[in-house]
Amino acid sequence: MNRLIGIKIKELRKEQNYSQEEVADMLNISQATYSRIENGSTSAWINYIDRLSDLYKIAIDDFLKLDKIIPQNQSEEDGLMNRLIEQYETRLKEKDILIRDLNYRIDKLINKIN
Image (cartoon, rainbow, N blue to C red; front, side):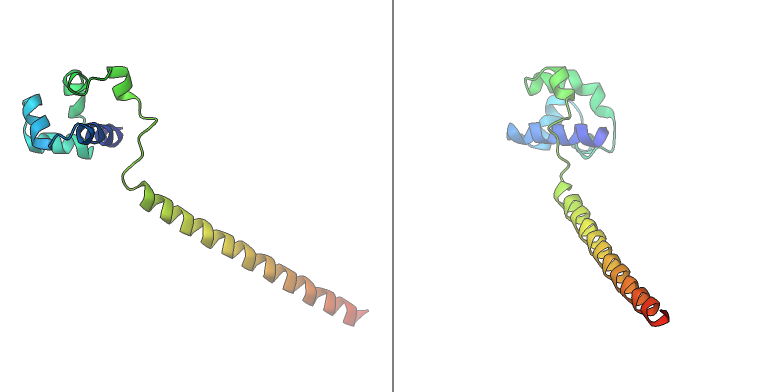
C-alpha cells in the first residue's frame, strides 16, 4: 500500500511540476523523508494526507483511490510475465509433440505384435 500511495504522490507532484524539495518544504519535512514517502519505504504519508490533498486540490477519498495507479516497473513485470507465458506455451507444444510421437510408437509396436 505504501508503495502504491508513494507512486500516486509522485505522479501528483510531477503533474504540478514540483520538485521533491519544494513539496517537502511545503509539508515542513526533510527532502529525505519526502523521498521515502514517494518510494513507499514508509507510511509517513498518512501524517500528511490532509496537507497533500490540499496541496494537490483533490479530496482525500480520491487521493486514496488506487485503481488508476500502475507501478513504475509494470512494463518490466509485464515483460517477464510474457516471457514466462511464452516459455510455458512452448513447453506445452513440446509436450504435445512428445505425446504424439509416443502414441505413434505405441501404435507401431501394437501393429508389430498383432
